[in-house]
Length: 207
Image (tube, rainbow, N blue to C red; front, side, top):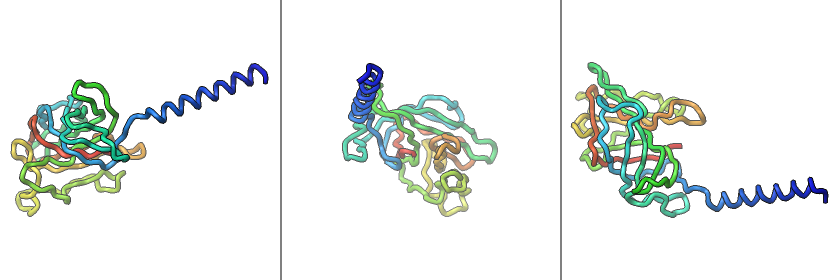
């Protein structure tokens, strides 16, 4: 065997070994649609928050991956940021987008990359209104939530922000490279709203 051929064989073997090593140490993942509960660690506000502000939430339960093994231990942290802010203007709704992009341990060491959105405020005494949940056009939805007001029977059942404002949710995720990756957008009914630190949220892993 010539020296050049031997080099090619050795290179191929090294690449194969690297691929096998990577497959054995590949980072853990969470399946799209996985939902779990977190506790917000810093207040977010549709009037005062700015795009790029950091958002941190503490995981309230062990979260398991597709193989049934724990991927996110209880008390690990989700790190994200505010992706959009649209304060209330007159009778127009306030909107606040949040996308979580990384999970870390309590000391901030990375655990995994992910894309996750807020889909509900929990433990608030109100039930989620499925009719107020929308998806953008690239996900098969209209991209518009159903208008809510005091005359709508669903109004009383809507989730509420920390300052008592009715809120609803939209998933604004990029899918197949299309759309705007805002994560989860929380909308109010005509007033600014906030979610205090300590608020419990339901989180969903996106595609």
